[in-house]
Image (cartoon, rainbow, N blue to C red; front, side):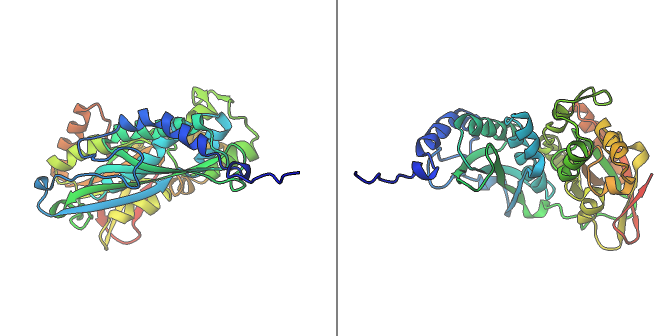
Length: 346
């Protein structure tokens, strides 16, 4: 008997599935192309041209992130066309904090067995996020890794590059006592704290993903899968018009970890949590988990996805400009002298 010849497919890697995935992804990728894109899908690297006439001293700002265990919600729901948007949001919102305009994005998707339709849905979400952020999806990688991931599961990570003129970098150094903090609402839990969320709802309470919760007005799954908000378009316009002194993206670590990242030494942020309009999901989590309020603010965004630091004389103009764009924003605190980074007044 002739010995069977081993192939790559025998080991669990289906090259044809990879080809099919790329074919299905192309229509979503091309939707994101901006005028700076000078390469097509399939090259070894993505090419992007910078208009150097727009900048005196151009500085590139990079950011990378993933979606975390929120992916488990997508697996439970078998819904994969939104988590890519989360991945984009986590990256572009971060570089925005330095005053940078995001230019392009690359993604990395790894799975045990490549399913072309599922991979295409993931990239559809990435594409939607890129369009919202005004960035081009110029490259990516899809890795099939047998025996490495559980059946039906995958991971996604992303990388973005933005640009800012050196004189316009936002680093918080000009923040001073008396400056005001403006909050922009989140869409919900965003992409942080899901290890706690999953333990509470599915392990401790034993809820099913399709459980309808009256306080939310929807099922648990539909609430938790809501994509992270992308703040690039409204906030970048503000950066060009006003002296935005600091920007904080409220991600992992909540208020306590992220707001101090934009503050100079010797200053602290005093936050009035009573004015923050919390989405109902946070009250549900707090009540069911019997979680201390400070623990909530050190884990979740609690309804504020982005915080801006501006001088007192520009507050009204900034808020009104956002309202003109149908963007809700309101004062949540101020800067004072002191140590400790953040003081929350409940």
